[in-house]
Image (cartoon, rainbow, N blue to C red; front, side, top):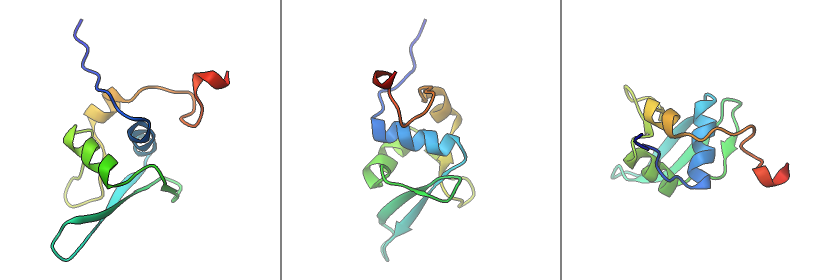
Length: 96
């Protein structure tokens, strides 16, 4: 069987979890169009601290997030497939 999963960091995993639950990534650009900041907004309106420009660029490069029609970035089907299931993304198995 072919393993198509990618290695993703904890920050990327947390960001994908927030996006899978209805969040979005909003970008701020400078006057030249370069990305200055990337904020992950949860479905409840909170800002995720783990999401930064490096995490955004990595997820975009791996095609786990995409923007459609000029809208904020959201998780793609590829991102959902590679997302590791967890009971709660704030806990690890060591807590049990």
